[in-house]
Image (cartoon, rainbow over all chains, first blue to last red; front, side, top):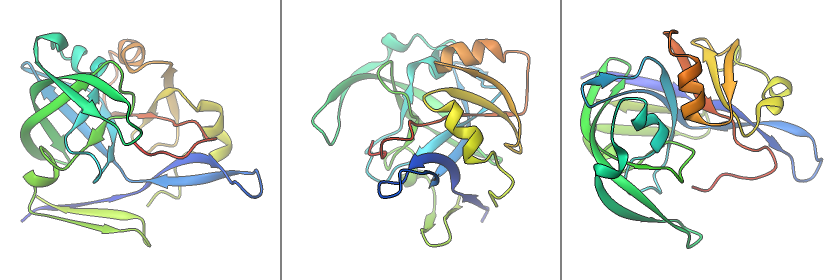
Length: 141
Length: 62
């Protein structure tokens, strides 16, 4: 069985008590996307999000591969804060460190951060280990 | 490990931007305010990693 380990990626934050700029490490996985017989040249960091039901990507990513976003099945995505957004489902392939996952993703013009969710990503792999103390995710494909 | 990645003093200047880094994440190759704009700019490049740098003054809760 193949596995891959992804160390958290540094982002920036402001420390609430000191007001100083600090490193904020986040679980992001670099993904190459295929759809519509095209494959993205670049890797895009996707947030590993156990709170997300499904994969949710920015519409621009799909459009860059020639997808007609609004031709996909229209779905409503509800956020924790009650905000709802509209997305469109398409068949895609995720390429992650040489492993292919054939799945679906929802694309929305209202979404900035690409999210890897439970259905369509986490349920397509054998096992996921999250080590928050050491700041890594290990995926067994 | 992430130790050699871009440091916060550099990242803070990039918040709210889409950024294309070299694959080892030590160099900024390009940046833009939207992913679509960035992907157009880096059309001819290969082997880059693209990331959205979140605003520093808020936590992330997608």
